[in-house]
Image 1 (cartoon, rainbow, N blue to C red):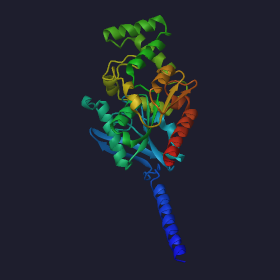
Image 2 (cartoon, rainbow, N blue to C red; image 1 turned 90 degrees about the vertical axis):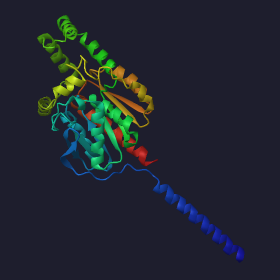
Image 3 (cartoon, rainbow, N blue to C red; image 1 turned 180 degrees about the vertical axis):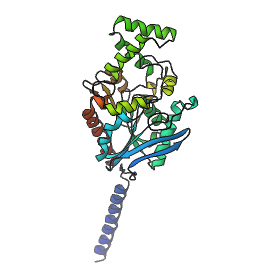
Image 4 (cartoon, one colour; image 1 turned 60 degrees about the vertical axis):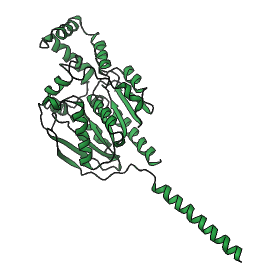
Length: 330
């Protein structure tokens, strides 16, 4: 009888520790839940002024923040990604200087560091420990440098039509210009050698290039008008240059590709078939990131959220959902 009681006691102790282990394992399971953000538009004070931001969606997945192009641009053209709201909350905002944010002219703020810190102030203000970071065009620079500065605050990275190898970008645009009439090619060369960008032929080259490789065939007219009306040419000119294919600003020699192998989060690269940054360049760059995916949007120019709206949203949705699922199962 004593042996039976003793055996029962030891079995009970064993079962207790097994149950404790199982509860502990469940408790350590990482989930991509976050506090619900207040839906709607608001402003946040940052060094230099106030930035405008908008939270949409009621999905329970980890929120995603959208970083627009430029520099000096705005987020109007990123509205299609608010469709992700049934999966997760979406944070769309205008970087200081453009869109609905305060206009600035102080060149000491026209730096990558300023926009990275501005982004993290927004994260802290929203009360998020971590989020998905989506950057398009110039926004890919902000996204990459944000991850470099705060890797523990990023669950995944999405780079749309990247430009964090600016010399490669300029090479790509020059190759595209080679198909233009000789008169326009000569006008570009003359303007770049003299610094006089007021030549009507240079402007014509810009108009044709933008129509073919930047804006595409499906811009949302109201958002396009708002994008152009709130564009900060001072920031663009100082950091980038007079046009997409003539880079003379502070970003001219920017190349962060050596950092890419150090990215440790899932990363998605997307590009338009007829983008100003060629798909083969983006694919080669994507290959430097260990855990990366790559997608080309057929028939699309640089503004893939307009030219390939539904496909772009679908690809990003599936990517973010897969990252959330992976994190929840760890």
